[in-house]
Image (cartoon, rainbow, N blue to C red):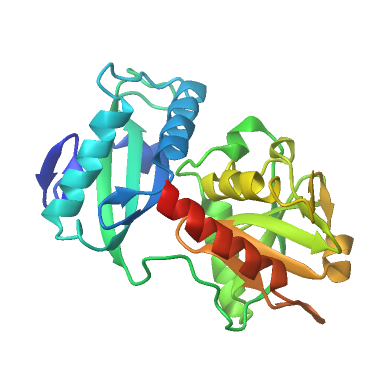
Length: 280
């Protein structure tokens, strides 16, 4: 069961051939984790969505406030018997039908879809997690690249490339050949007591988990946080590399080419993240 504009219904009754999200990628989405009905980091998700809608010149309805969308998410969880479990929520907002590249309206509709998750808390995986660079296509270092839109062709092709090469993930590059993110999250590189991540100006996703980790790292005096461009050369010199996203939390990279990595910082951060999650 999905939530379509506030109505709970079967998930095969919504999409039409001229849906703009389907036809042009004219849509935004938020991937959200919930735990027993509690929406984690909801304020960050909501304000990112509102800012992204403004950038795409979508009309934001007057009733589209935090409380309204929170209630609709919870209604969808209840309809799918997930109010007392952990779940992955996908909230998609798309411009309504009409027009070609130039839309006839800036009004929007939304769909909420939910799926169960096995883990209530964030956990560090000790499994092999090998990555490499995906260099077939590059991401533009622009404001649009920081948004979570339905234009994810590069990430789809990159995921197929990773599977074909027995990799668990790939790191993407911008047109300046800087490492900006993974296929499914932001990237952090640890060298000594420095933790580095790409700046938004390089075109990386403005991730909600990225925001949470930046705040946590700033409270840790033993580490220096740096937001600066990352060269591929730095990866082989790193002590640790990890990927962040809202569903997994932190995913340590175990291998990049011939280099193996530790996960000491990842373990320290995941503990602090779970504390923050409980207080959220």
